[in-house]
Image 1 (cartoon, rainbow, N blue to C red):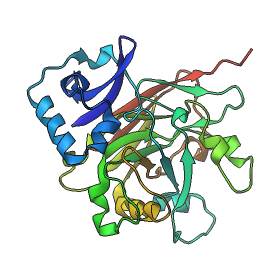
Image 2: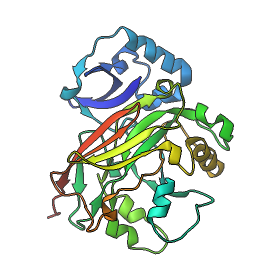
Image 3: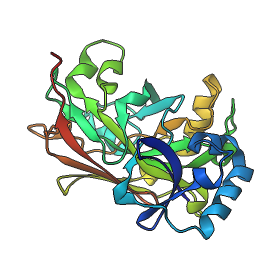
Image 4: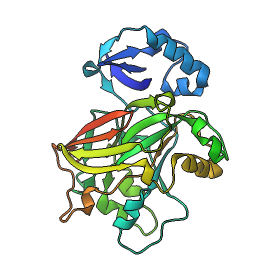
Length: 291
């Protein structure tokens, strides 16, 4: 299934993509209030959703709804820095491959859904893109064994982990400011559930395009810390919960790495494509200055 949250008629609903349409699963399963509630219900709830979707005709065209974040308010959003081996080399600092992953966190309102506007803030002209594969947690847990970690994945999504580059250098030991500007990144268009990946998660491809120009292209075969390791490592120090998101890192080719840098400008179209998920598409707009 491709689970999504969407706004129609002024109200947020949840359902699944089917062809070029949306099936309103919330109407068919009224005791399940949201995608998050579905994930919290575990496999029995997912089975009910699959059954409801199987013979249902779409209720709306995708073009007639506004997609929200697949889980509109995830409790925790973890981001992994420099996780592709080629990216470590891109820094040209002679450093060895890291022993542990670099981690920072983002707040939900720093992201918009598929089709939402990425905002270039008035404080900076260095809005950059970072195409990534996102893990959405289904089954929660603490100190999850690596060999059991895949069972905790609800599915995958596309992420543009947008960054305000000059603001990540405002402080010595963190990147929080530059990673949490309002509506600077995007998640979506939906969650492709784990059963859509019967062969597992090795060799999945992530690509980023700006105005149709290929900028990033790599596969999970080059991850230094794979999905199972990340889930095991993160759950060592915190409890993972249904709906939590892990942005697994971006390949080489971000705008800052060009000479001169290719930062995003109003009107630019950014697309992030992930094998088995689809394409996340957003247009950049200039955020108005406060009065």
